[in-house]
Each structure stands twice: as structure tokens, then as C-alpha cells.
Length: 328
Ligand SMILES: O=P(O)(O)OC[C@H]1O[C@](O)(COP(=O)(O)O)[C@@H](O)[C@@H]1O
Image (cartoon, rainbow, N blue to C red; front, side, top):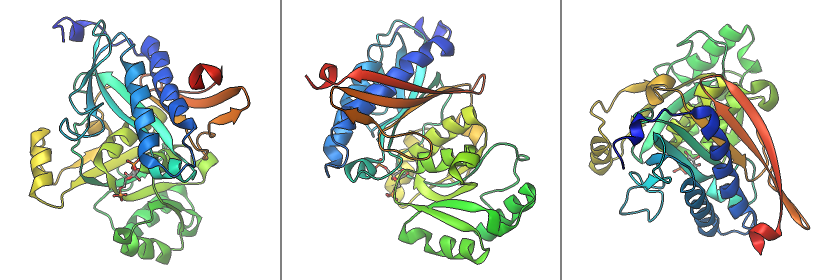
């Protein structure tokens, strides 16, 4: 990587269209694998396409949130350099297919996701779990916190919204580890939208609660997904808090290798994403945020959410292309 690369300004406005293409191409590549029961093939197709497109961008990029560490991920691994090398030095967080099982089963809210910011802008989260709590924009900082119990979180948000706890809807990943949390939230009278996978979308739903009906996200999921969700909320508005969870020394070792020293730290959105970023996500299967890829005889259409945190701009862009150019 040339020393001058990081000195070139990160022109987020011009790069954002390139980023949208990266997300679109990953989604298009997985389109023919939606509902085919093959998670690995869908993921691999998205990874290949995302990498190919990224390497066309005039950036000196480094993957900081990727498909895993070098020895376990052949492509888009953490530390991989991407782009032509002729451009600004940038950090990239990505998940070529967030919701591989959702894609394989044709269930809602599978997305391709990518965020880009200047060097050092995103937490190098290890591939561990993270305890997460998120709400949408318009609330005082810290109105809810990870240190509150699930009941306290629901009650605090209801008070801030001026409604009853029973008017709140919480999104939670359906996992045995969340049973106690789900029971406690139910006791408040709040509704719960259980999802089987895809907590980046789960968190993003909080930022558009008038469309999605979700007020709050809570529970543990992947730490890399936590950083991607923080990047999304930095653009859309909203609060997210995350605390890394470790199951063993190997995971603590991974965190230490990523430069993390305080294992109990609660990260706020702006501590996970410390500078302005751009973010793109393309819908693979349909959901309340983005429609599914549309495949018709002769053409295919995607919709991409393209956002810049500097301006808070949120675009939904649809893209139609002849099928033959992708499936010839
Ligand atoms: O399935 P687990 O182990 O509870 O992990 C939860 C994580 O898996 C996902 O549901 C899906 O991840 P993949 O797209 O890699 O399959 C994430 O959204 C979430 O953070």
C-alpha cells in the first residue's frame, strides 16, 4: 500500500456510488441461489462478486470487518487489501451476505452489507458475540443502556416515547440463550418481533420504526455485525451499545490480537464507528427495509439503501439490468 494513499482525501460523496455497485453486484450474484437451500453457495457467490467489484474501486482499502481471519477465509479476510491502490486509504467493513440461512430458505431481510470510512474509523471487532441494544433516533443519549434489565429498557423507552410499555415492539433473535430475556420483555406487555437471523437488519429496523414497527433491538449476535449495524445507525440516526462476549480464552486471544484491551467495555455507536462513513445495503430477500431482488424473464432488479453519515442522506436506489449480462 503506497504511503501517499492514506493522504488522499476520503471523498465519500463520489465513492458512495461505487459502494452501491459493490452491494448490488453481491446481491445479483446470489439472486439465483435464493431459496435453493445452499447457504455456502449463496455466500460464496456474494463474496466473489463483492471482491471483484471492490477491486475495481480507486481506493487503497483494507478489510477490517470481513469473512474471518486470513487462515479461515480465503477471500475478504480481515487485513486483506482491496481496491486498485490508486486512491484514499480506507477501512472497509462488510458482510457479503448477511443472512445466509435466510437466503437459502427465502426468508425475509437477507442483505448484502458494506461500510467504508477513513483509516481507523471502525472498531476491529473480533469474530465473537456481542451483547447489543439499539433504538432509533430522537431520544436523549443514554435513555436506555446495556446495564438496565430488559424490563427497565422497555419501561425507559416507553417513558421517553410517552406511551405504555405495551405500545413498544422489541426485536430479538430467537435463540435459546435469549429465553429469559424474551420472558422478561413479555412480562412488560411489550410485543416482540422474533427473527431467526439477520441482526444488522434487526437493528436498522429501529431507525425506521414508522415503517418497520420496531422500537428497540436487544440481545446477543455477532460482534462484526454489531459494528456494521453501528455504521448504519451512524447514517440513519439512533443509538446502539455493544459489549463483547467471550466464551473462552481463544476468543479473548482474538480480541487481544485485534487490539482490544478492556474486555468489559461498553461501546457506543460513535465508539464503534469513530468517523464519518458511507454505507450500502442491497436487499436479497424482501423485508420491511428493502424489497427482494426481482427476477423476471430477461431482467433483474435490485434496491439498494445508500447512506452517508456526514449528511445523514438516505437514498433508496433501484437498478435494473438485463439478465443475460449476469447469467450468460
Ligand atoms: O446464529 P448465532 O450464532 O446466534 O449468531 C447470530 C448471527 O448470525 C446471523 O443471524 C447471520 O449470520 P450469517 O449471515 O453469517 O449466517 C447474524 O445476523 C447474527 O449476528
